[in-house]
Image 1 (spheres, chains in turn brown, orange):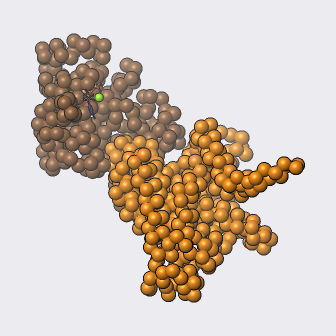
Image 2: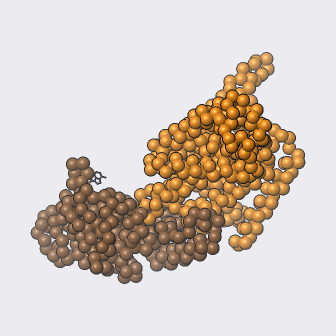
Image 3: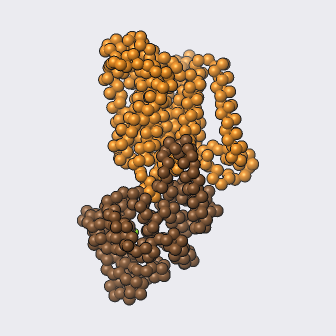
Length: 257
Length: 351
Ligand SMILES: Nc1ncnc2c1ncn2[C@@H]1O[C@H](COP(=O)(O)OP(=O)(O)OP(=O)(O)O)[C@@H](O)[C@H]1O
Ligand SMILES: [Mg+2]
């Protein structure tokens, strides 16, 4: 079964076609990368899948169900979580709170049960806390649980953002430039980390990334955007040898790699 | 440790009630009135902080919710003959003219009605963002006032209501302030409270984490309106008279001042600041009266107090825009850490 299917999606802002006739099929366990020069429309494609924008044309379906036009929270609830290109943590809240918040969507207790700490809520809160601490342990942030999110070093903030997305229990994880601003060592760790969470959490991953080292290392398939248009699609080997890609992107991309 | 903290909290509550008891026995009625106002402003401040401080909504409709609570409580507690005396222009609508319930139920009804009104206003207005929400809620509060001025047979219009039974006493105000602190504190420290704070921090990220923005904003707004209604009901029954003019924007401004000074997003900050502002407001009352310095007589300028208040607000906003407490809380952990002269324990700013 195709987990995620993007069919013929175009996103037009006024006169600007940010994404044009985009198609994607994501299978269980796959890692697919989306690359392309700045302003190519990659983040816009993410925003369409996650419900931030409703596509001007086309459909998005998840597990064979049409999710086009649903709100971001509804889409996340069904199993698609994301991170942001410019980290968007809840800055003034603690590391632990950031992860706890991402569990709220599955809470069954209503606000009265929560306020008056009724048994069902107490049970749920205990589970959420345990689950969150486990998750923080897994991503190596347990010791930082009480710190303010904004006080973490950059690499750890990226990691926390991924942990927060994982806390929503996704089956698909969308990562928008997870290695941005990282040094080579951090980039290596991240590559390994992504592979590991894919296996541990049985995820499919769709990610935007400029670091060729990361992209070529872990992607099953790569999609290349240029001015909103998909100019190539294939495995890392095919993409590296694709003439169009070399012209449009890789030539310029020396500085990213 | 946890038990120890609960014990400390219980002891603190006990001390509070001993204080209330002694105050009740010894203080004159003017001082009692100020104490009552302190507690009422704690309730009002917390209810507004839930909406504006914790959830990050820019709402200016507080006076409207208070008016709903105050009128409901007054109408449900006034004896028949006082009602007839009040409504000499237009007789009161049936069955309101003979309806009354015990004080507590009247307060509760005022809170619930304010909550319902909050929900009805919130449902459309909370779809608006930032400044638009402020304008919409401000407009709503003015509309409530105009409606109350014109529904003669229910509210007695511009004449207002006089002779409202003064059922509010220090036990009610301090008791309900305590209940409000406990309830709003418990809500804020629950999963819902975390969701509210997430919305305040970053709406886009919160929505992407599966939080239904609209639903949570409506919950915070409605609960805030409920407590504003309770506060309004207590205030009306403390003063004994209410009229639509009492619920001008000025009243909302007063509460806003409290939460900005205390810290948007701090319960303990709100409590401290409600007390400072209420007592300070009384202490500054001399500014409105005429003064004699030596042989010089300065005529009183009414509204001078408000000028000083507004200047205070501006100073707070400009120089310490996080208020007294910011989003921090006073906690036992924090206190222990201070005495132990050690850095704050992990998670020390949580209750
Ligand atoms: N809400 C919007 N309204 C108007 N134009 C937009 C909007 N969002 C994106 N765009 C435009 O769409 C184009 C694609 O932007 P997008 O952010 O998707 O690029 P990107 O591939 O993610 O680039 P980068 O590598 O810099 O992150 C840009 O020209 C951008 O200005
Ligand atoms: Mg982008």
